[in-house]
Amino acid sequence: MFRYSRRAVALVWQTSRPLTVVLAVATVVAGLLPAAAAWVGQLIVDGVVAAVQAEGAVALAPLFWLVALEGGIMAGIAGSQRAIQTAQSLLRAQLGQRVNVMILEKAQTLQLAHFEDSEFYDKLTRARREASSRPLSLVNRTFGLFQNGISLTSYAALLLGFSPWAVVILVAAGLPQFVSEAKFSGDAFRLFRWRSPDTRRQMYLETVLAREDSAKEVKLFQLGPLLLERYRDIFRRLYREDRNLTLRREIWGFVLGLVGTLAFYATYAWIVATTVAGAISLGQMTMYLAVFRQGQGAVSASLGAIGGMYEDNLYLSNLYEYLEQPVTAVHGTRTAGERPGDGLRFEGVSFSYPGSEAPALQDISLTLAPGRSLALVGRNGSGKTTLIKLLAGLYEPSAGRILLDGTDLRDWDPETLRRRIGVIFQDFMRYQLPVGENIGAGDVERFDDESRWREAARRGLADDFIEELPGGYHAQLGRWFQDGRELSGGQWQKIAVARAFMRQGADILVLDEPTAAMDAAAEAEIFEHFRSLTRDRMAILISHRFSTVRMADEIVVLDDGRILEHGSHDALIAADGTYARLFRLQAAGYR
Ligand code: ADP
Image 1 (tube, rainbow, N blue to C red):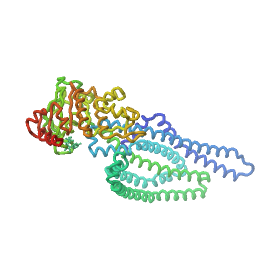
Image 2 (image 1 turned 90 degrees about the vertical axis):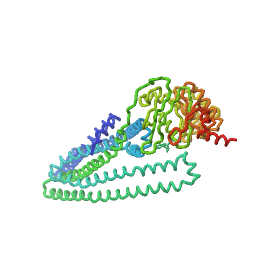
Image 3 (image 1 turned 90 degrees about the horizontal axis):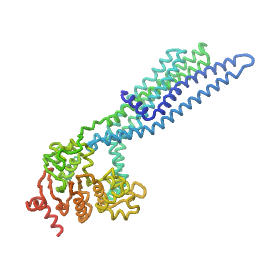
Image 4 (image 1 turned 60 degrees about the horizontal axis):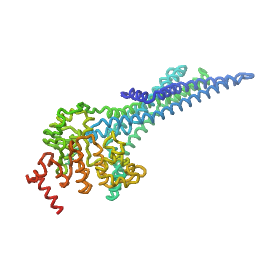
């Protein structure tokens, strides 16, 4: 039940030792002082009673000293509570950041398939939503429990002077409320967990309704009211459940709280009767009443803290479930192939996406030697992008193998492999960063290298319009930040292609249709640059334009995940198959 408490404390300790120490010391002080105040209060009342009954002159000084002492203790309580609050709020900021960084660092180690798996995505969202506040809450409650425990022990020590039964009543009266709290925290957690797909859908609708990249379409298609209604519906459903739980929780809390009130007043009557009988002094009566009342507060606070710790533990289980998600980290270590210069080989490669039955690729065999270029053609959904994803190591083949320089991709060191392959997908990222950095993203080692930006932009045909932008290569792109500019689709694509040209170290370059929005002449010119740059490298191109495709040394026609035809443009035309038919169809369109 409290599996994660120790880890939470360790996490806080690692986050800031000084603050944890301050928190611990202030907690002990805040725990001890209230009983001391009650004790001094008793001395004052008894002193006053004695003074009133005494005859003749009374020395007030000792009483004043006691009052001053109680004042001092109160100041000490206030001070220690402030110290607790200060330490907590500083820790909250640091811990929130730390946990978020842990979540993001973990995200870097995940595979693409994880991000596409909705169940896993739920874990990630749940971890992100609650986890940054829960560890501190758990620690606060642990310390709170500790503080109340100290107070309670000191009250119990005082109360024992009256009767051990009073101590028993004090503790027993708090139990029913505790049981109900624990039950409802469990319910609240289960509710939170099971509806996280709904919460995620709500977050998604929020994004669609309030982000610049969807605003255009939402407006034009008047989707706003419809999506907003869905958003409201989800809220209504969630709210109904929340309300029911809250009502049940509070009603039970009130009813069971009455048990405590009853116990208090019964004990009150008992103490009054004992005082009247002369068994205890007036000062003792005041002290016992104060101690009993505060003791009750401490009991319910402790039990509440335990209930809360249980709840925090449940939420932390989410965080650790996410952080401990196994990532298949078995990867190779080769930094050079067995047969350098052998190029790329697909040998009987098949692949199905996780959770889908129909294979996206079936029995693909092909080779590509350094210095050669390959074009992939085929209908939408024929498996072109999937082939590239396998090549880039984003997924592993379900059957068969892919070799680079004679060595299976799985045996390559992933870092080396990534450095050797440069891919621009059709859904490339449009970073909300300066133009230059958008190009520099293609090679992290040269991210800031202005001369390389310029060179890459020239090859990607992006230099002309970039130089016209105010600020040139330093112009901010996107609308999220101040003075950001939006580019046209074709201009963005030129940036993306320039990004590919940044990658001079890569010996396999892939353009997966990032040129579709450019005019045919620009696409052809870019591919020409691409080929000239890739003299001893391998270039792979996906395009629907036969005017570009025909420039490639080899052409592979994919259909339904299989290779339908394979050869040079001339050979495929001569064979008069699908490629030739599609080529003539497109050519006829230009006549
Ligand atoms: P192409 O690039 O030729 O248009 P893809 O390689 O993107 O085609 O898609 C091949 C097939 O794999 C399609 O049937 C598509 O629905 C499926 N597919 C693509 N991406 C995924 C994915 N992430 N998860 C599951 N199926 C996918």
